[in-house]
Image 1 (cartoon, helix red, strand yellow):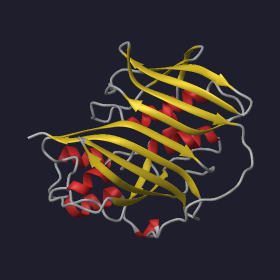
Image 2 (cartoon, one colour; image 1 turned 90 degrees about the vertical axis):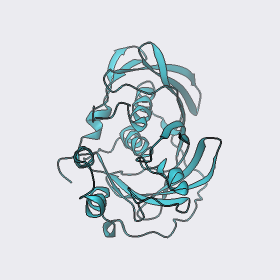
Image 3 (tube, helix red, strand yellow; image 1 turned 180 degrees about the vertical axis):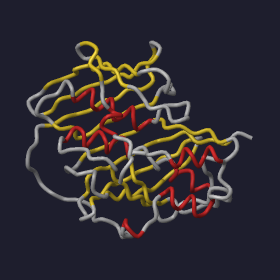
Image 4 (tube, helix red, strand yellow; image 1 turned 30 degrees about the vertical axis):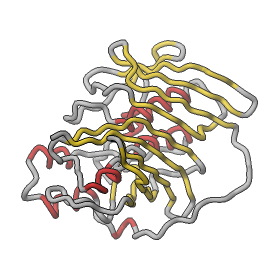
Length: 285
């Protein structure tokens, strides 16, 4: 796993003033900032104002598209510091306007009752080709050169799923998908960095689970799509340099929106995190 984008460096924030931080987005040829990056940077901004507590949940709304060409300012509101729980709100700003906001709750680490859903049946991650290898093998002769270059860039997350949609002749598929994922570059042991990288990855290959139900892909003419909100619950510590299974389903699409749920399991079967998202998905004639 060489020549990978260093995700920790990408997510790094610059302190500007008390409770105010600045982050930037890599410009990879897309006009909008990747939503997972804003989630992760907002979480790290909140962590900069919290001591000796670990995030257990976050809830976020995407308000306006982020511009990759200018920095993002993250303003943290120290909502509450309680005996066990700490609450923070973070507003992401560009050009004087909110593009995103996040609420996160942090807890003193403690022992408690243990229960979790069993890990579903799954293929071994090493038996599944990488996303790039699958695309090049199936569509290499039909992919535009610009798309090949974008897909070949040294991205920070290794993604593998066994049942990808056909890029050029999509068909409706069941509202269920599994994706193996892990960070390519070393993250380190800090919980906040592990969680930030997990939050970044949680927005990858997620909306596609709602699109596939209707036989849609990112290449569908007239498709308008965007993440509307995003929620995440951290259940147990992980090392995201090891494989995680992101098991996803889409219970509903209606009124121009799709709803997706996901559970992230370590390779040995521990439930690490749960994720939910609602997305905009409409096809204009």
